[in-house]
Every structure is written in structure tokens, then in C-alpha cells.
Length: 322
Image (cartoon, rainbow, N blue to C red; front, top):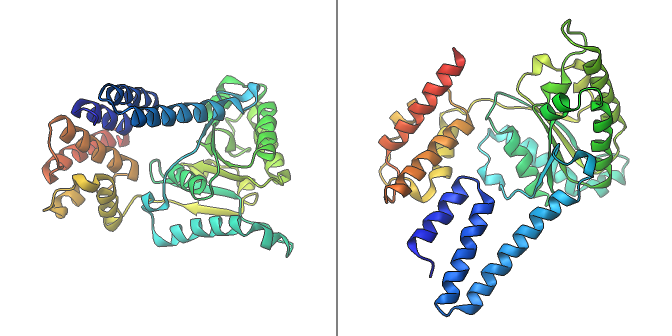
């Protein structure tokens, strides 16, 4: 059996989002098990680690050389149950997955499934997670295009890079997320715009209109007022996200804390302290509380401990708003 310290290291690396550290600790667990005479278990752990590392390398290697570094590929394991959004929004996400699964039936009637989706809302309200859920539910790879890096690093050849990305979209079906889409989707008539960016927007409009792939293209934006109006009619659906209401905040906290949730939890004060925070900020506060509990050898997160973390997030949030 793994030592207590090894188990703690596994949990810490997982919660901190450090996959390589997680795999390294897993190998130490394998070595420990081998030393205890559990050779079969040690071999199974090593095989799982080797498989995970091969999959991670494979995701990076299948990208064309010219756009490696601009596209981050992953096979997310985010289930639909992790997405805390209004029922109407969840239903529309379900409709996207249902149409994708039934695309052959739709095509037989001369129709196409929804696959060009615009997500609009404040930062941290679930747009990126929605793309992760789509990829997980449909067993597709999620490719995240780093739009800001595409524009700043390749100014002057952005349109050419966009063409390569759309070639990849055609050749390798998956979910393609254009995050921070405002960087290239700005209104072409803005006075402070430059000719290069107008050409980039025009190129994107042309590429997305001509795209006939089976991939799902997702564009996420925090600022819809900045987007070129011509973009909206190129997308099959537009989903709007908002800050979580009280019921959604409660469900989110329950989801993230899980077994760490104290048996008697005074919700009124916690929900008041989480008001006006985004899903992501509440999630981070919950995970900070869990890490504190683990490092203090505690088995639960108390309402007071969570409120402290929520107030830290509120302080940072209010500082940004000023």
C-alpha cells in the first residue's frame, strides 16, 4: 500500500493540475509496491504511467510543425455533471451533442448538425468548461487555439496560420476552441483598428463560412460588443453565460468540496460571501480550502474556512473592478 505521504503527494499534484508530477509520484508508488513484494501491482502502475505519457506525447506530435505551440491538445475528462449552468443552457449543450451523434440521420434529410458555436459571457462562467464537456461527451480531442499568441507572435502572417488551423480542423475531427476570441473577432469598423487585423477578421469569416468539416468549432468571448457583427450569422448557435445564482453557487460548492463538505454546513453566510463571484473564482476558493484541509491533516472543510477563501477571492475581484 502506498505511504500516507505518497497519497498526499498524489492528491496535491492532481489538485494543482500538475500531470507530470502526478505521474512521477505514481512511479514512486510503483517502486514502493515492488519493494513490498507486490510485483504485479507495481507493473500495472508502470504500464498506466507509460500509457498516459505516450498519449500526452501523441497529442502534441500529431499537430503540424508550423502550428505547434499555438494549439494545445487534450482529452478532457470533464463530465456533464461538473457543469453548473441554468437548465436552459444545459439543454442547448445537450442539443449540440445529440445532433452530433445523429449527424448521419440529419445529413440523409439534407440538414447539418450544429457545430459552429459562439459562447459569450463574463470570464470564469463556464465557457471553456463547456468546450471540455462537449469533447468528453463526444469522445473527441479538444484543441485550444491560443488566439492572443497567434495575433501577437505572428502579426503579418496570422491569416496564413489561420488557414493551417482550418486545414487541421478539416483533417482531424475534434472540438476546436478559439479562446479569447475578441483578439481576432473585433469589429472591422473600429477607428483604432489596423489593416492587418481587418484582413485577419475577413480571413476568419471566409474560412469558417467555407468550412465543411465534421469538427465542432467553438469561439469564446468575454466582450460581445467588441465582436464584428458579421461573425454572428456564421455560427449555428450562440450561448450566453452569466454569473451563478444562489442555487448554482450552492451546487457548485457541493460538487467541488464533495467528501470534504462538513456535515453541518451553514449555507446562508457562505452563499452571501460567494455572491458576484464567477464559477471559476468559487471553484478556486473551494480547492484552496481543500488544500488547506489536507495540509492541516483535516478531513473536512468548515464553513468558516471556506468563507475565508471566498473573502480572499472577493478582495481580488473588487480590486480588479476598481
